[in-house]
Length: 119
Image 1 (tube, rainbow, N blue to C red):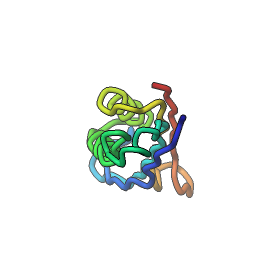
Image 2: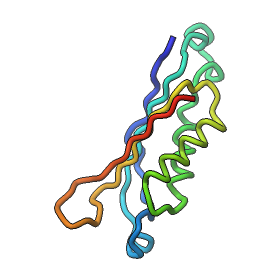
Image 3: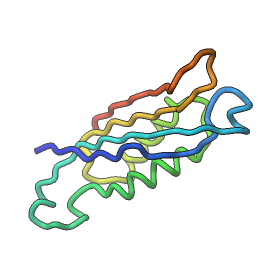
């Protein structure tokens, strides 16, 4: 059985980007996470150890977003690597990193990347 846990709209202020100004001024980001897992054991036990702890998911996202990167692709990849290494029970994960009001030529609400990985 495959079930889905979603942790969406994780708000972070961070200093990512290729321009020097972005390292100084920073910007607003949102991160959405989808985790495919199996809830079967937790249906019976009602115990956190039998599912994916979304507090841990949120914590990993915030820790990785605090590490400066030029590319949001790099950040997304780092987050998924940490999930794979530190969180048990994940069958696959999708992460979306959204950079709000990017400093590009034009009126753009956001740019985003989405990465899906099967564990």
